[in-house]
Amino acid sequence: MMTSRTLIIGLLLSTLVAGLVIGGFIWKEARDEVIILCGNFKPGVTVASVRRQLDTGNFLRYRLEDVDSGTRIDVDSLYNFTLYHCAIDLDQNGEVTAAGTH
Image 1: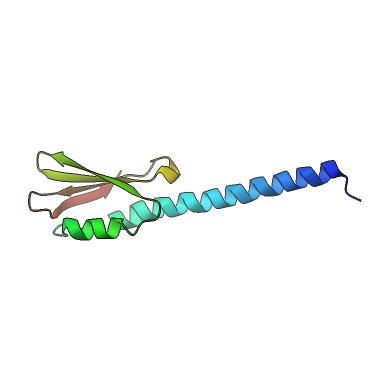
Image 2 (image 1 turned 60 degrees about the horizontal axis):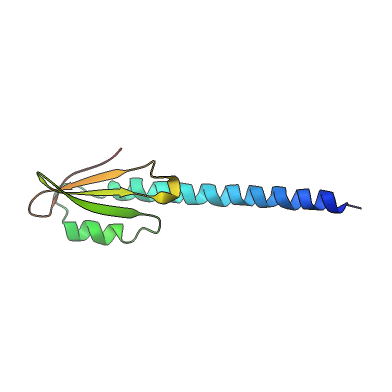
């Protein structure tokens, strides 16, 4: 017969393992969204298309900032502590000139 202490330890360990598995899954999905979506943005893609695709991400956040050459969209995710980034550079016409992860 299991003692209550053994049962509590078992439940705590099970909860910890489940949390790690779920956390790992979310981490990977957030990383994949940044990396895979960033690969979609080739020169000539419009800013409307970029924003439409980024809006499909469940774990992403992005910010637009003005730079000398036009606009830059920085993409990352809080779900993986912003370790994965995508920078999308747009020209004055609102078309992608370059995109890459860093």
